[in-house]
Amino acid sequence: MQSSVLFRVIAILIGILGYGLLGAQTPSVLDQAAREVNTVVDRALPAVVTIESLYGGNRSVRSSGFIVDPAGWVVCSFEGIQGARAVRVLLSDGRISPAQLVGADAITGIALLRLTELGDLPSLRWGDANRVPVGATVILIGNRGGLPGSVTVGTLGGKDRVGIRPQNQRVILLLQFNGAVGSGEPGAPLLDTRGQVIGVIIGALSSVEGMPAGGVAVTGFAVPSSIAQRVVSDLRTKGRAEHAWLGADYQGLSGSVIVRRVAPNSPAQQAGLMPGDLITGFNGQPIRSASDLTRALYMARPNQQVELLIQREGQPLKLTVQMGVQSL
Image (cartoon, rainbow, N blue to C red; front, side, top):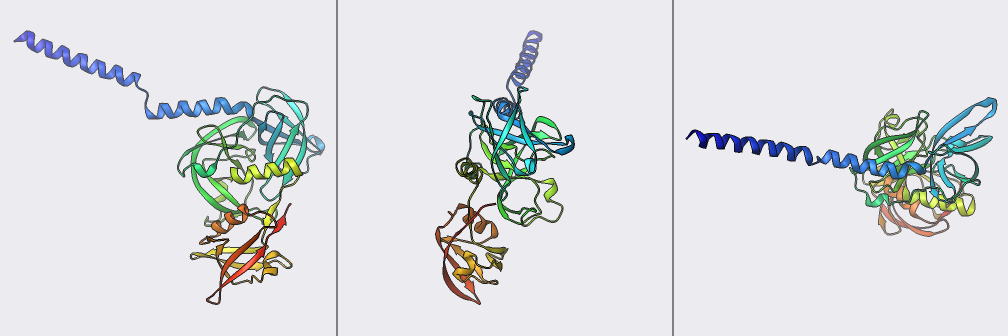
């Protein structure tokens, strides 16, 4: 009887010990996620660079960028280099290279540099932000407050946010990054869990539709890859980025978009669009919010002919618009 009890106690102890060993050997979900993030960072970090802009009086400013072509093409922030007398790029391996400005787009805030003295460099690939679900883990690598290679892990907090750039009051479509963004990080890549660039961190915004005043400072935003990639391609081939231009200021209003102002001699004015019109459709796509219209405009081509559905004093109308070209 005593030996039977003893055997049971031993069996229980062996079971507890075995379960403990098994638990210690089996990685948790968080451990697995951390390893995946670490793998992405290790692969991407060599292609993330620091941009150093040199001004008069030995003043310099540092911002972020990343290599998109092994031949030495570097994406960065326009604000980070604007007005600089010279720009150089600091690589993660310690090398420093002078950089030539190929072109800049003041609408999206993206600039393109070329490293003429270096080649066969590590580079990042473009991803597709449209395929990354809201809530997914995303990774920012940049130069935070002068600290290169700073890593921030967050989530994709939203898509199709509409922001206003303070320099020129241009409307831009954005990804929302739920993670802290510090000084020096505009121009940094926002990566998915495969290490592909789904967005480029943007600089200052004067406002974001739907966000109360002051919220912009604590939320990160990025230009989606679909727009950023097209801008970079334009800068590389033409030296400037070209966007379709409607020429109307608008605001979301209860399931539609209201036109607030129409620019003189703009495509909108020439087509007959008027302040107070409600835009409900764009080339066959329903327009229910400002983000819908902003997305449609960014996806349209310069000089493309499009059809607008509007409501004017309760009456439906169709307007044919020959889109213009906007380049800053």
